[in-house]
Image 1 (cartoon, rainbow, N blue to C red):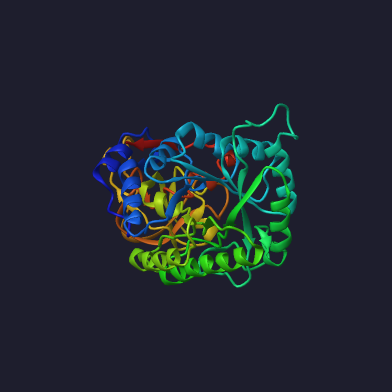
Image 2 (image 1 turned 90 degrees about the vertical axis):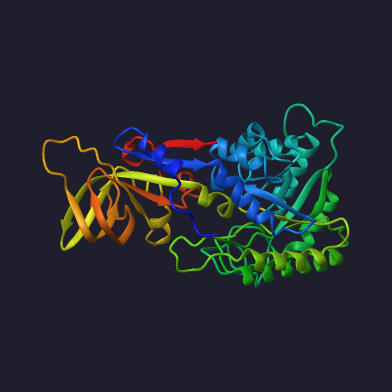
Length: 404
């Protein structure tokens, strides 16, 4: 699943942006293609959700909602967006710090709520029975489906961020699972359907992820038997990664599919396995582009300084890697003096912010790079604009272009 070369219609869209160029382009066809690739290895009884946090552009959400089985949201704002764009079916509400208003909104939306603690269970029960707000819940609606998010020991996976298997603020400690399950069964308005076991972010080791999926289902079956719970829902989370630098290796979907088949075979009748990837579906459908404003040598290193930076695309600085980029040549040169340019040079690519950490790429080799050319960063459709510190220095925001 390597990123494709810059598509012609993406290049054309970038050339249409106002100068100095700075923007994201998202492509609907690429979104649908990624979903189709993943669906190709999903066996029956696996439901595919899109994690809205990866890219919350309304057209991205709307496009993916039309091709997957539902959406995973992690805030009231994401839930409202999902409801506006169409949910695709199932809505799962996650997050470690849900407010009372968010719990009430999740109840009204009919979402499966991934509950993080006994305190949250009690507050959700109040929302479910209408005692914490004016009015009352629709009496025709059944109890709120609840999945307990569990932080299991020894559930670590390779990836950029470990969510479980260690001390994190996510989920219920497995040692307290029995107490939490008993509380869920005793509280009014709740229906405990299973478990949420999201464990990692950006794992490209398909064999390890396949083993995790099988283990997650088998653990859920054992836990449900011990708790006398009718298991109907095992959400293994997302965490399916992409290789940004070309060094980690791509996620092997065939290996993942084999693990999914083994996991589903361990499910009891009436239960389903849920996946909620974001990065894998959206990353390759986005391109971030910024114009080179300056080229200059400083203490023996060449720098290309962009109209853009980590306030738009924070991931390289946050994760400490060099993001690949390509040159989109621009022949127009509006100034009455010679154009700064480099040939066969190694360059660090920096942004416009007043911090030395505003670097998107280091030691990139260019055959030709000129001031006024556009540098294009592929695989930026997930966790790009959404996780960046937009307002630092109050620069104009990048253009956001969606190609249907």
